[in-house]
Image 1 (cartoon, rainbow, N blue to C red):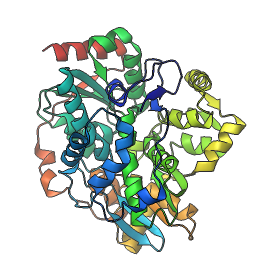
Image 2 (image 1 turned 60 degrees about the vertical axis):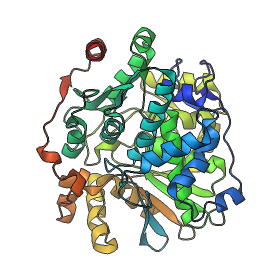
Image 3 (image 1 turned 135 degrees about the horizontal axis):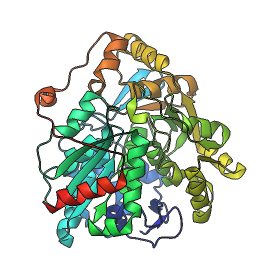
Image 4 (image 1 turned 180 degrees about the vertical axis):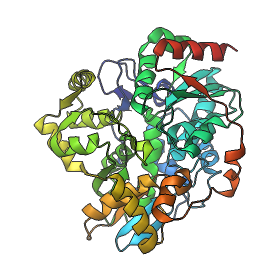
Length: 462
């Protein structure tokens, strides 16, 4: 299995090389050269299997010879051992034909744990074998950072730096990043919004002298291994609802497009997915693009669903690559136009995107009302992001096809918004009950590339 760049100008890499590299050297994102297929019989054989066994069978063809079967199975087992639910990603029925996929039972209470806990294990195994150490820098709108820190803290072969927008994440999200005491993790509160953090991260990857000097690696959703790990819960959920003998649709609250792109890969592998529905908050660039073909940046407006407060959706590049017939030159041209403010998707590519994706937008008031209604009528307390998904799913779902909405975070990560809507302040799980009492360790940084690079070099030299 080889991995190629969405911009067509970087060498093909193995799974291990693509995982440790993160972003391709031409600025593109790595994708598999070919998509492995699962037959109906292979999907049917997953009925009754554990989440770990499903994960092994789904991901194994993508890994190539990076890990032996025995080692890979062991790393998967370690990754999910700390989850708080035996099913790992349980399904809950909200209404006839509408199901909630609970992805918040990991150590940081968000869907990012499914990928990050596994990546932590994969990185450590690969780096120990190679006798190498890397510097991981990530940008987060809230959940990626805490999941990355939880996965990599205390590991011998990794230093971790997480950029998050100062004042634009929830208190629980911030404290999950700033309270770990391990010396190899560094929380950096950057002035600006998430897109600024993501832009500085990409600038670091594109500065090859710095990238090579600190052995830079990335675990944002630009990293293919992140997407791969998320493919598994689509397969697990669909099988639970009768796949391959029954089609299923999914609604995904998303800002960076990585989570729903994993569903697209599952569909490409042969999973019978009817529709993939993108649910956005008021920062609705994805909904606007999928409605009109125009991908035009606007201002980021802070919301009660902050993990979706994004105007530059990095993983959308992967979808565009396929929509343009895997033409790296065309994608590179679009990304150049994006730097100037935006681009228009060609008619043919737009039609290809619409074959797979629908979309909807939810306002702040609608998000709060959905939290209220879900508690009263469905008996489910939703975080604001999950509420965005449920609202769009209810509006767009076809009663003839089961709809699964991804619940991306535990309501306790956003207690103020949930309490405002429901009158209930969701408590943290017992294992995190002292989070508000732990001392914080954070560095405030300017939106300045040179200053960030200097800080990182100084910290890893200590």
